Amino acid sequence: MEKDRKGGEAVDQTKAILIAVGKIILAFLFAFILTLVAMIPVVIVIAIMSGGGAGTDFTLDMLLSDPTFTYGSMIAQAAGFLAAVPIMYGLFERRKGWTIGWRMNRAAFADLARGMGIGVVLMAAIFVLMLAAGVIRIDSIRTDAAVWADMAAYLLLFALVALNEELFSRGYVQGLIGYRFGTGAAIICSSLFFSLLHAFNPGALEQPVPLLNIFIAGVLLAVCREVSGTLWLPIGLHFTWNYVQGNVFGFEVSGTKVVSPLQITAEGSPLWSGGSFGAEGSLIATAVMLAAIWYIWSKRKRRLQEQEPCSPQGE
Image (cartoon, rainbow, N blue to C red; front, side, top):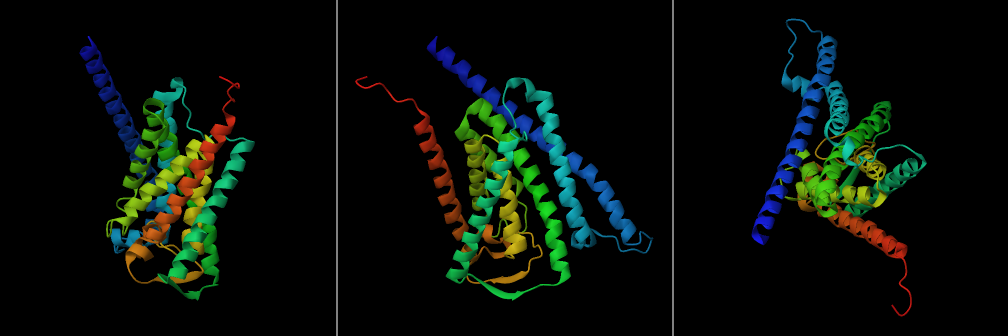
């Protein structure tokens, strides 16, 4: 009987895993399809702006090099992922009791602000350490109007990136896995999914560190989700991490070049400079993120211990 019971539990566990994986794949397909639909007006606008005539050299290379396509694709991706999660949650999860964690209230604004502060501090620490180690150098500072215009535009774009990636990875994937398999599995699985989302970014596979660091960044964001109980702490961290990294300090953001007043050059081994992937590809970023994970998680443990009722004396 004991053997039959264990066999039944194994079958149930396997079934639960397959269902969870299937839901994540289905959610990603929804997001991908909705992103493609949202891209249609972007391509139409670019075609009109380029002339749209029979003689127009309308190629994939032209699209990829067009800033309008870059901005439009980021907005379209955000729209696709932001729409997919509520659809999946409404269809399959609403009655199960777990929440995505994106409800807005006064505490949400506090978490958002705190996350933004953490993102600024962590990226500033990485920049200063890389500068002190001599693996990057500052070449010049731009102050033309185009820089400030792009910096203003990327405030919105990186806010959308943080919102849609956190809603999908930490809201849906982490929530789904955590409901069925617990906190540890939720953190690991959502971080693996997050690293896979960035696997095809420029420079992601040129050395082992970029994807490793994206996984560690996923763990950091997942820990923030667990500690706060909502998405707003990781959304704030994700937003300023990207924005300060690219538009303030001049690094590539996960392999994507953005405009910044600071013009910097990476020097030495990509293991330390991050190479073409940016600061996220550096072992210095690895150390800073691991320290942040330890600090945030240890604060959570201390808070939980303080909340435990004291045992009566003599018990």
